[in-house]
Amino acid sequence: MMTSAVNHYFRSSIGRKHLVAITGLLLCGFLLGHLTGNLLLIAGPDAFNLYAHKLMSLGPVLYLIEAALTAVFVIHLGLAIKLNLENKKAKGKYQMKKCTGRGTTFMSATMPYTGIVLLIFIILHLMNLKFGTNYPTTVDGVEMRDLYRTTMEYFQNPVNVLWYVFSMICAGLHTAHGFASAFQSLGANHPKYYPKIKLISYLYAIVIGGGFSFLSVWAYMKGV
Amino acid sequence: MSSAQNMTLNLKIWRQNNNSSEGKLVDYRVENVSPDMSFLEMIDVLNNQLVRKGEDPVAFDHDCREGICGMCSMMINGKAHGGYKNTTTCQVHMRLYKDGDTIVIEPFRAAAFPVVKDLAVDRSAIDKVMAAGGYISANTGNAPDANSILIPKPVAEEAMDAAACIGCGACVASCPNGSGMLFMGAKVSQLALLPQGSVESPKRALNMVYTHDNLGFGNCTTHAECEATCPKGISIEHIARMNREYLKAAFTYHEKKRSEGAG
Image (tube, helix red, strand yellow):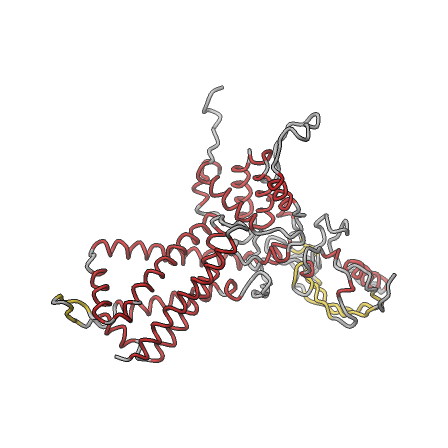
């Protein structure tokens, strides 16, 4: 077993937790970038469409980034499900009360559920927006997709807004535990800085959950 | 001397003949429980009553009864060792309960801890993980000079915090994932901090984690429920140190085969 230490690493409890942690942090980074880009909605249709067009015109580079992002997501999801099923088995027949408030919190106890909500959300999100209605528009003489209109129209339906806000609350709950937990999994826990990581984790969760939710409500209030 | 009145308690105790049989909670009533009794003494009183009636006494683990051996277990009202800060079951005293209270007593629950009978569970999985690397190799002979290897005070303190683990398994029982990361982390961390233990640290981390995973313990998801119930107050910082040791070992440790090298 010694000679295959690296091999075993990727099958071990700690090694796989490291992978969940790293992919989780990468997804956290993506979310922050996504939110920053979305804030351009407020700047108006042209700014938002130009930004989207710039991303789309990256061509093969964009596909590469998208493929990497998908891989990161699939690894995170696949391992998390696998680890969770193992954990259920390790607890045996008598499942205990999950959310005690002493160690486990509502956020940590609901990680699998908020994760599943986010999976469904991402599928619907891609279908409705990225692969949603394709309106053409022209900005500064360049023809491009009017993603602004697709987005604003989507948020005119209050059901869509509610689902979006619910999903973003789940994203906040998921990252509030996940962000700090990733550092612990990777071995970065020290009394000097771990409380700060925890604080950043909560702030991050509020920014992500609140930021995206705000934008959806803003779009609904603004109208087409 | 007791100044308080003796109590009458209603107990719901998990009775299970062996690991393959089905268990259930059975109601008992114990009278004349002194508030000065320990929790285990209260069960002794119950067992005396049961024996006198010709019934099967409740099997439970206990040994030193002074909070140091790690033998007593039990989930008291759903919490390992009753959930009192830095307290083992034997150090829980009946003054913490009121006359007429109902107390639910169950065994430590985890797939890695099969029930032997009633409240007694087989925790030898912990010993197996320890045997895989929770030790140092030292030459026997005369006792070495105590101060030949100097250890900075803060390091020694931290190692001692981890060394406080009594291997009771409360971390595994209270973990929603049935993971043994805290007791394993405490041992890996304690020895990695000290010069005597750091020599074998990579091999220890690899072997212990490997054994832990194969024994049916779960994976850590950082609930920190273990830290909250550990009777010795061991922090999950030690899990983090183990994670570091393991990462380092997995990517750098290389054991030379006999055919390699000089000799």
